[in-house]
Figure 1 (cartoon, rainbow, N blue to C red):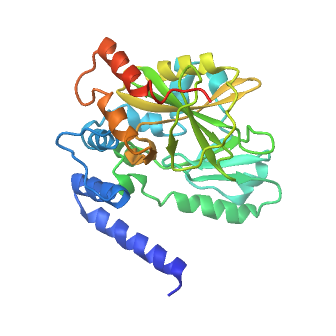
Figure 2 (cartoon, rainbow, N blue to C red; figure 1 turned 30 degrees about the vertical axis):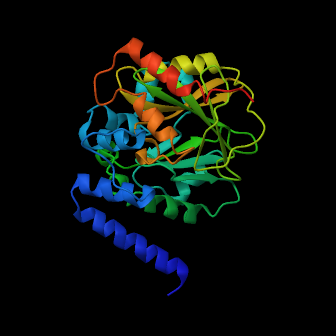
Length: 309
């Protein structure tokens, strides 16, 4: 058996094991796979442990519509205005090459119920093959893999949007919002080619922090519409203990990307690793938050990491 086929067979076997486990056991096994230890779900201290607790215990009835890449646009339009939306050119449960041929190019095809299932389509693509690939995404059970409850309650569809970049995908600004306040901003460059990632404070001071991808040595310039994006992220997150709001900044103004309630399925591999504990200790979840104490605790957690380069 080839290495590629063996890897795929191993993944399918692992998913079959997960399918048969209760949620808490599946979450614990998934956490062990990433960190080599089981999470403390009874008394979570690390941020990643608190994320697993949130996945198991905090099933907010609002979140399925907000992680649905089609339905969330209604919420954004009502909260921020239509001007924040990337238009939906088409959405449905079955994509065909004929539909793709009718779309302006380049276009972006996405699954509404999961992450990382994105395809850029140009005039030179085999559009029938592209449609088959996208339709296969609908069989992927995003909830099953990491027990992210909200995704399991989304009616699966595909959607097509216009490409908003120039020659490559635009920078993706991801606002980490805790109890209604942006605590830091993740910036992803060249997400589909030589991906790099940086972190900044809301005042746009670079943080000494990495996660999953290398950082670039040069600082990212302050986005022109940073103030508007900070306000938008906090407005969209109102009433939630945690949410990551993804936005783009364009010459015509900022645009909404998506909302994520458990980034990386809560399995965030920070560098340095002790940031996981610092971030967890600075967030009162699962207790009720006290706004003033919360602001102070976050200031303590970030004062050593919040440095301009």
